[in-house]
Image (cartoon, rainbow over all chains, first blue to last red; front, side, top):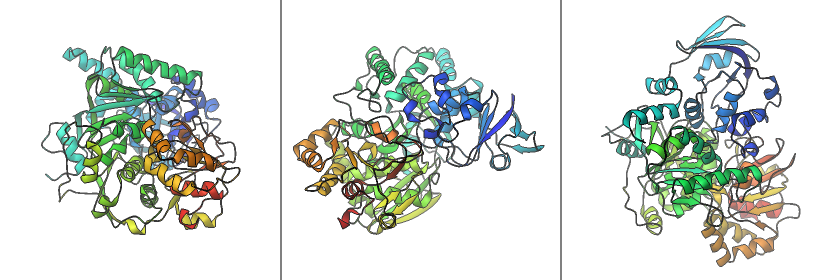
Length: 168
Length: 421
């Protein structure tokens, strides 16, 4: 699978409170949440973001709360992938579980700039900066996680296992 | 093969002889928990699996603590959804207004987690129960949903950082200062994906409340969990709460650690984390020099709403008044702690000092309700995060501190050393 889009760039330690402030957590629908996505560090994000765009950030992306509303708000904003130097662990799990593509790639996170157009080939892990012509490679996910992604997230995978085992 | 304490608990719950860092495993869970915000999402996910029951009605905990008592209509609807789910799925450990407390104070208090357990909670501060020698970690709503259905979760076995504690804490210094000091030292991603394992002679001198506070904020260093060895204090605490059997795990003497730190508790100073990251630690001396005027003080939360936190705040506020203009909000974490505050006279002290005293809620910690900040306002808070906009306006500021520092600051109106009052 390939995706292509323009980059929104942020720094280190982008936390879940700025991705989706808790004051909006009295709702849980992605379409309601996306209106406030990134609001406290980038008030224009919700109006500027286009389907297929990407987020590129530094270390420890998604630190803080366990709220799944954070990757959900990003996914429903149309973001096709988040590239970061590293992810906070709960955000990492949540993104995989709900089917928001994420990639860890230090070189790409350093070199790609705001507004660059980037394409990603998830099968090979190749990240191409179309604006500069440079290519980067991300480590593929372990097979266990690839299985979850291939099954369409943890819920679909669990449902499939339950159907196979007759375990409802 | 040698293992850390965390690895041993995980291996046992995966029915494996041993595990090593980086290995992906599936573990049986002793409990699965969620709050009003995260359970609301998990319910929808659970229903997508087609499951009509949970794996064990005694082992799913639902705690309505974040936006309760309901802060608005939408929060009320979320709570109603959780309430209906608890009823439909016969969830035995469902805690609603009147008996609810902040989950990470309530669950240990009710004896619902014991040493050696492996549990997940859809709340990042679920790592708190490491204080009891359990493996507990925060996960999201989808993991909660699957955990409720299957009683299992997948984990990447973490490597660990070892913190050897020696000595005893000086007066007015507590577990909060220890963990803020550590996060200041290693940073907010210093323990990313790892366990923080605490050990050493100094552990014995720490109260259970101190240990809960330290384990609670392991997540603020990015850790998967924080964990303490089980000693007499742990056993006494657990046995006063439940007669459920438990198993004590110990790290192997030759267990491997990515890094090791020695911390002399007697040298830890009252510590404050400045906006907007918990790693921005300054000692109280440095903080006082800056003479930072404050508008609000919050004493409470899953980090510091326990009885010893109430006690030190009461000792400092007794016979004193909070400074005019400093809104001081004190929130005991559970009904049991609330009652004890009444019985011991703390409530009277707080009210006579000019503080507000509230029913248990997470409210202000995450900018939900019960103490939201306006533009430009500053709060000294015993909570756990000081991110941009965490407690209200995007241009407000949160300074994380211990209950002693928070109470002293309430009296003086600036960040203040409690030993200098």
